[in-house]
Amino acid sequence: MAVESSKTDFPHLCTVQTRWHDNDIYGHVNNVVYYSYFDSVVNRYLIEQGGLDIHNGQVVGFVVESQCNYLKPLAYPDAITAGLRVGKLGNSSVRYELALFNQHDQLCAQGHFVHVFVDKASNKPAPIPELTRRALALLIPATP
Image 1 (cartoon, rainbow, N blue to C red):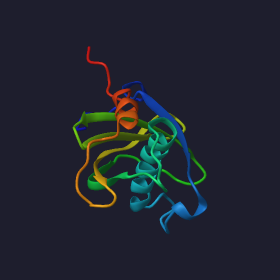
Image 2 (image 1 turned 90 degrees about the horizontal axis):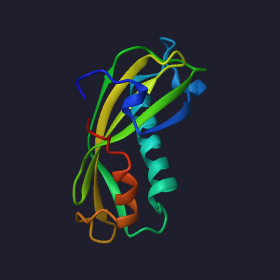
Image 3 (image 1 turned 120 degrees about the vertical axis):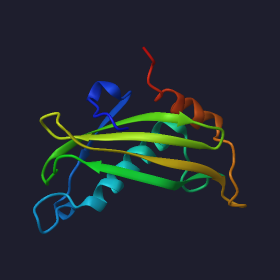
């Protein structure tokens, strides 16, 4: 995701509320917290739209790669808009692309992470469950 994005580039948008303890001593959201935002946005979507059962499901997603570019600081008490799209949907893996926008719609961070879906019992890669795959397919941007 080298090119800076706008909200219109993302099929799914949601609000993330910063928390008091997200700020570091410099008065802005600490870099590691951005990954927490990414993880929460993706997993909330998977649970609400993709049928992910985090307690009893047989297939779970493991993060195997992540990256974030920090462009502008965020700070508590800002409400952030997170954008989510799928950059690549494979048989057992998916690359999510995410962006975080401040209350003025300025792009503050963008990044990606890759989930590999695995069978919980064997810890081996497994096909993405069909309901989850359908939900993820909705996040693939239309090509012009």
